[in-house]
Amino acid sequence: MNKTGEANRFGFQSGGAGLRDPGVSRPARSWVKWAFGAGIGIFVLIAAAGLADRALSALARDRVQKAFQQYFGADLQLSRLDVKLFPTVYVEGEGLVMRQRGRTDAPPLIAIRKFSADTSIWAALLHPPRIHHLYLNGLQIQISRRGDDRPPEQKPRAKVQDFLIESVVADGTTLTVIPRDEGKDPLQYDLWRLRLSNAGPFQPMSFRATLRNAKPPGNIATSGKFGPWNRDDPARTAVAGNYTFRDADLSVFRGISGRLSSDGQYRGVLERIEVDGQTDVPDFALRIGRNPVRLTTQFHAIVDGTDGDTLLQPVKAQFGSSSVVASGGVEGKKGIKGKTVSLDVTSDGRLEDMLRLAVQGPRPPMTGAVRLQTRLVIPPGDVDIAQKLELLGMFQIVSARFPDVNVQEKINDLSHKGKGNPEESESDSVTSNLSGRFALHAGRMTLQGLSFRVPGIAVNLHGRYGLIDEKLDFHGTARLEAKVSETTTGVKSFFLKLVDPLFKGKRAGAVIPVKVGGTRRKPDFGLDLFSQQK
Image 1 (cartoon, helix red, strand yellow):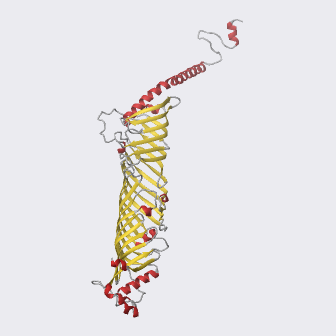
Image 2 (cartoon, rainbow, N blue to C red; image 1 turned 180 degrees about the vertical axis):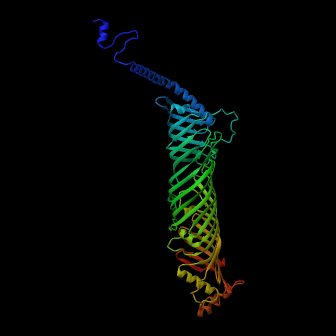
Image 3 (cartoon, rainbow, N blue to C red; image 1 turned 60 degrees about the vertical axis):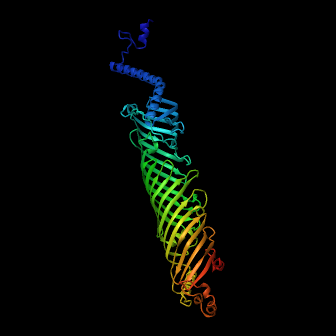
């Protein structure tokens, strides 16, 4: 059989236009040709894209390096960068390290272990170009303030190409700020969840983050705006937002306990963030007292986000029927690890509220109105708050009474005897006024000019009180309106007339040296004759 016959056997015949199937219509043949051509075209495009990946990777590396240099004022190193065009634009890389230009003395500003980004060809061609998603793994940001006192370079800035990243996922980010003062420890924030949106070089980006606070431990959720980036001084990059802090365990600070919650808003730049907020601790307690109270505060603070130093201007606290206003700071000191709290404190309230915090038992030993002014210092260190708390100030207590009936009866009896009426009814409850200056250091309270007054008697004491062991050691004088012999009746009164001249005072019936020892629970009162002789 000839070739023509063989071709006819398969249903084809030759013609001037080449092979054709007489059973296939012209439109069908046209569709086959276009499909075949499109397939060849797609294959060519795929092959071209594959061949172009290596060139595009090199081009992308160059563009990324230039963008970082222009936007951050930084030098960039990349271990690997790959670009794919099909079916979408996809960029993947690892080992990105960025250093501020000329800052070889400082650690890398940004280090990223791995990263990837994706977008569409159409979005990449928009103006500005858009990146749909950017994923950062192992992001570390380190802002160093050391050695940055020199003025910024006066070179003209290159124009930064605008771009927009719609979504950034950077969970597990670590932000470390190295303060200018070499004596201060770096400040570290661990952001175990971080999401950014609408990130670009000329606008602030939105963020949502969750970080774990170290002390007191608890989760802080925050959202707001950050940027645009200040390339000349990163610490002056703008930030604003709000936060919530929940279930923070205060027992990590030895000597206190309670669960803290806080809400607030903040605004400013990294090195000066103004914060307005409030806290609530429904079960705040000191270990020495072990009586929980509800403690709430409202505060305005200025926070240096580069080293954590905080100015409190002011803090207003409320517990029971008492209020406290404090102003000062929480600051690091050179050569000392941790922060020192230094506050000027003024309080107007009830004595029983304060004693409930400091004294064990269901009932406070005294009640009354109290006014307190003190300088309060809490140095860092893992010791009980009662041992490291430092106070220096003065107090005034008005109309004090003693809930313990036995104690109040003794005060009543003391008042009657001081007036020279030892047989006066003890049913009358007298009030006491106290005032003095105090200093607390290493768990021991030193009091000077301690004045205790009830009708008929004025006691002036000085001495020490142990905040932990509750030991008393006071010495002073008791000035009575009556003579010593007039404080009792019968035979005792007769014999005491012999000693009246020994204790006679100017403009007073008697001046008696006294001492107070023992403990708060079992005080020991007595004459301090030895002291008188000295």
